[in-house]
Length: 507
Ligand SMILES: Nc1ncnc2c1ncn2[C@@H]1O[C@H](COP(=O)(O)OP(=O)(O)O)[C@@H](O)[C@H]1O
Ligand SMILES: [Mg+2]
Image 1 (cartoon, rainbow, N blue to C red):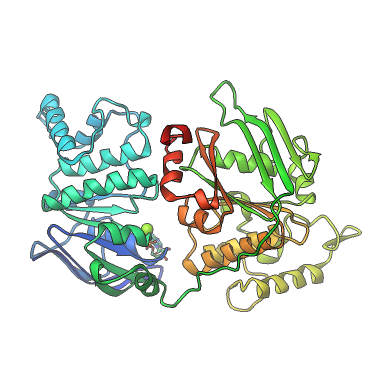
Image 2 (cartoon, helix red, strand yellow; image 1 turned 90 degrees about the horizontal axis):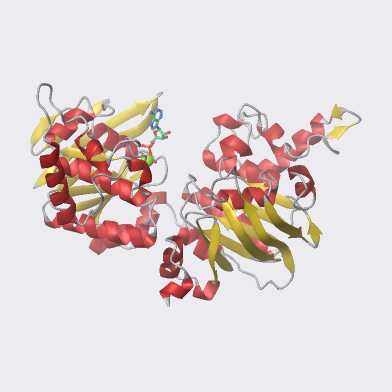
């Protein structure tokens, strides 16, 4: 029997459908995956179910009864729990207090001891071990996620919704997490898991519902499908995954970091004695759980952060004292992981954003006058070459803020990668992009490598790292804890290093 049925759910935001006549049914004791590209409408659909948004049209049946939830409280009271992409725990409070938060009824004292016992039992039963007296801020992301799940279980939910839960986990943490889900399923819980990773869907789910452009495309039984079929339904067309990977020499050193350290105030260094060589004609992947020094590494090479100590040599020249502009002039390009903060000026148009790095130089500025025609020509050429979709006509006067993430990223790439570039630092270059744009970006990076340039690819997407990199360096706690050649760079090895377990310990 279906424990949940959503029928013909529609929801518009400013006149545009985020969900359009979507059906979803979930059985008791099943793990149901919700798959779709960014913006497909997955989170919206779940927010409607959880009472955060109300649908414009459609009906929800929960255990056979028609329901309408006006807030998450209503949904929880009926037995539906949701763990959001961004957790909603109170950082300064303990695990136990977070779990029982909001449960204290007026006039009653909550039995803290009893609560602790119940929490302990739940944790034990499902393998969600976490110290009830620990403060949330001392916990790892994986542990915080356990607390979120415990909080839902504590409220006796029967359906648990998980919105992209594995994005923040290492492969090993993901495996442990999946074991928890399997136990929940055995106990008869229903689980809806949102993910865009095919391998995860194949390993954890019983059924899959695929959304595209706000519409439900198909329901599939996981055992009867495969990753290629899933991907084709998700994007609605076939993709060519094969890049041309040319033989390049990879002997000549392009960049050399020696004992590079960055320390802020008296805290632990954010970059700790980094020694790293990057060759010509290679893509060096940098893997790691977000926040282990990857961003600082990118910024110290691009010239945004100063080194506290150490040497940076680029084609034989010491550049640690050079600023961003001087480094760009020497061929160091930087694609920032935050295109809205650092990459683009959203209120400016395409033409202007494309020349941000060189507007005060010829040919764009001559004798103190901006060369409007040349600036425009540059934009028209770039729009064509990168197949950038501007609004309406193909002119460059569209404001960048009106464009999709994929098209914005193309502008950053086009501006940063010039014929003078020798080293491209690409930080999370495909994060938030749809598959089409993702493929485009990867293709561009591979072409640069094939031409003999160097690419440093920082990415949280391990499949991307493994697909593109000639070598993979793994960062943990501000250090490079291992460098693997393409042949050695297996998912498991990278995963262990990402968790701070170094080579010697794994052997
Ligand atoms: N609160 C909101 N206001 C306006 N537009 C929204 C809002 N939430 C989602 N959308 C839009 O609805 C569409 C679906 O978004 P979402 O459900 O978050 O997709 P997914 O979770 O599949 O990535 C997107 O185009 C998004 O921009
Ligand atoms: Mg979402």
